[in-house]
Image (cartoon, rainbow, N blue to C red):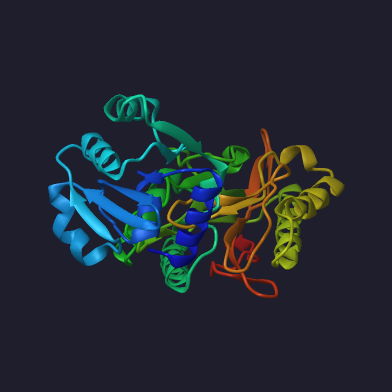
Length: 357
Ligand code: ZN
Ligand code: ZN
């Protein structure tokens, strides 16, 4: 159990008058007690922790899970309900963002009307924001594999190549180099398709003089990498070159301002204001970035509406973009870890290279 998180959760529990908190999200469970299987539940009550799983994972849990107690269930909801009843739980907090309505209904039915279910939303959102050393090491390993894989595939990005072939080759290279899985369906968006911020690779053939935006990532020890490279195939038009330069400058300005204590909406504004000043504000429709960890998108949020503040050992992306319908687009994305005085870039592929011959 992560001690600082345990204290934080005990505080939350007493502040909200809860008898227990139930975790069913597998990434939260992994973070809190180390379990990497696909079926389990974690109950935190009165400073004690109880892990429950099915028979397949009992042996694994014995060596992997750090909790006060471990139990086996035949059926999850019934098993959890029994454990809660044995503890005399009346008021239980749960992860509102991860529990389905159907599951909540079944828990209510099993536990009876005397048990009160309390939604924990924003209270848990920041649980995994601050990374420990082993988590940072896993993320760095994912970014190292990402660099090697991308370098292998880079020569394939040329006129006549098909977007989906590049995505497949990249996925294969990352797996071969030790990545556990892809972080998400890779975006390979060439020419006018670059105007789609989430243009998953298609059968389009890349032409000379186009930009190609590639957003990809891999997973190491459960932790994700996420980065975007925009490359030019041959000589691109002065307008595309100009857009590229604006996005790179917006990215670099935001990155230079990242340090503990910075309001992340202010960081978003640094990039956004610059892009707006250059006349392309309306073409930057998404937020500046997000936290990365056991989920590829997690807290904190970097956007105009964010109330999150940067703190040491947060891992975030900075990914401004400009997307012009009919013309194309540019996004440049890197991952950073916030240090005591600033931020250190985690992704290794340089973003200042421009034209491939
Ligand atoms: Zn990305
Ligand atoms: Zn991202």
